[in-house]
Length: 158
Image 1 (cartoon, rainbow, N blue to C red):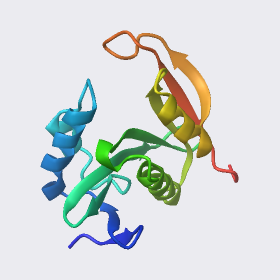
Image 2: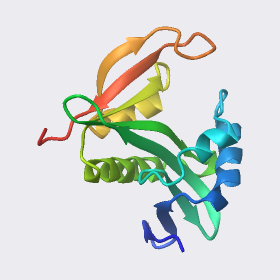
Image 3: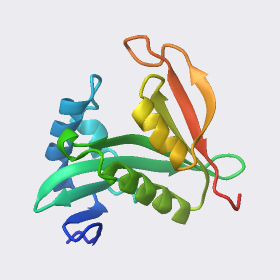
Image 4: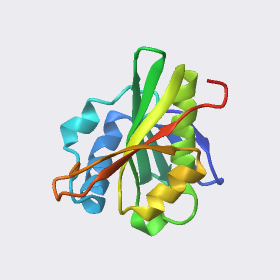
């Protein structure tokens, strides 16, 4: 049985399970122009920072993050973060991000990176508010030619 923590008395954040994958995939396709495949999500099952937010059995959002050994310390990577458009602007994306960062820090990462579309000002502001700083720009990162910004979070004690 999956256990999680309640955010607001109704919404639960917990680790993603196989049962969640179809709902995750459907939300991904609804939100993103370049959605991940179902099997891409499948590969991250079991990662401690692959989390879902649900309320009364309805998936509201998810975050996918992992880490890898890297010279100078483990490197965390926030790979995907999505919130149902009907549930935005209430802090759920921030909560998912914070929980994923916490899980990665527990795993011992020394830095966490992510990529974000250069024009996604809402996401960029969220990440900046949570301590992610610009590291570099990757031109033509996305298939439509848009650049990505690589943002990095360094815990205060590293």
